[in-house]
Length: 184
Image 1: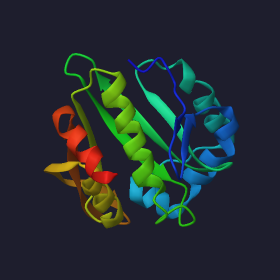
Image 2: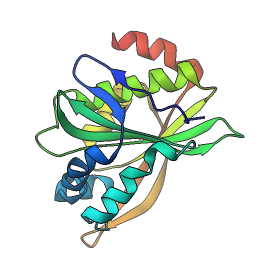
Image 3: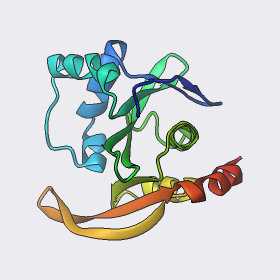
Image 4: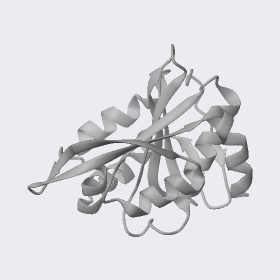
C-alpha cells in the first residue's frame, strides 16, 4: 500500500522519502533527551544502526517513512506504519527534532500532508496513534487536525520511576474531508 514514496510539499515543510541523507538528523532526533521522553524511547541508536535503518526505508511497502524538511534542514520524521491491510488501518507517529522545531507549525502541517496523501491515494479507513498523557502539546495538535481520543492504556510507560498513561486517538476516512477543510 505504501510502495510509492512521495514527496509532499506544504507552506512550512516538505516531506521527503527518508533515506541515508537524513541519518545525521535522525541521530540528533533520537539522541535528544526531551524527544526520548515524549516518545517513550528507552533505547539508543548509534550512527551505524541509523544508517542501516534509513537505508532500507524505501524498500518497505507496508510503511511510509518521510523526513520532515524545513528548507534544507531536517526537523523530524512522520511515519505511517503497523499497516493492517485486512482492516484498512495503520498507525501514525511523528517526532520533531527538539526545541528548535517545536511550536513552528511543522508537526501540524506534516500530519495534515500525510493524512491528505493517505486518504486520497489509499483505501485506508482508520489511522490511529498513541500519545502519552503528559504530552499536552502533541495532544493539542492531534485534536486540532482531527484525531479523536478513544481510550486510555493505563500505566503504559514507566519513565524515571513514574507510570504514565497512553491515550489512543484516531481519525477515520469519513471524518477527514470535513476536518482537512476546516484547517485551511
